[in-house]
Image (tube, rainbow, N blue to C red; front, side, top):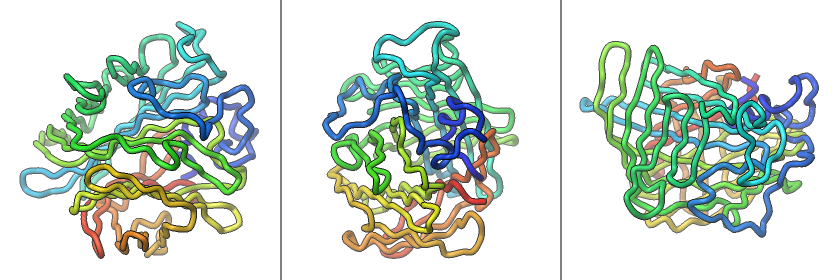
Length: 353
């Protein structure tokens, strides 16, 4: 339990793990030659839906909470990571095996009884994996997230597909709200020292489609959330893991939050409160509290508090065994929400022994 989606790319792009001692999976090391996020940058769409090869790490990350006809809950994850062995200028990506880009993808399907996960990898420049902003498409082999939007933003409507020997899904996503920028206009601070990323989400998807288990195909409906993030040095050298949540409340409001844990026992927190109409309020370090409610490692029950919004809830994993059995294992799965607010969401945990 030492790596996850936000570190896989650095692991692929760096020298052997034993050579990287600074920060969680080397993400606290100096990003020599790579671009760094800037407070002066203003995100622009559709361009920023596409890749940013001057930065070291990047991901397109989808989670969904689903329900079958009999009320059984499910969870889906689809993530495409880009990592750079060396920086490239925007719009001047090398072709073929000369490309310094490395791609990895994860797909998962969670049920109350089981958690299915798999991964794929590719080298950039070969056509096996990549992302285009216009028209929007993200793919690795036959796994795809493709825009089906006729008008508006390219992410307003998507088709999501993935398959593995023991599961598959084919889902249609329709956004009912706007894109949301985290932090200061998409500049998301990650540490007291100022490490940061560019970070935005589309948290307002309604979803329909089919998930396939080894014994049957199941029609489902639900909600989905897309995260987009890129950086080159997002962590401080003493940050060794994090706990991340995306919560969708029955009121229509949403909450994104994370706690980045340091080796001295402290944690740096950040949160975004999202109104049903998409109005977003960013909260600085200390406003959000995440408290484990079990001694299990990693803890799959948490108290989440954001007093400024009256949030005092308990989240609990649908399946406590939702470990991603991939090259770099981590925990990620759907959660239920009870307390001051109710609903469903997703939890990710990294850096636990």
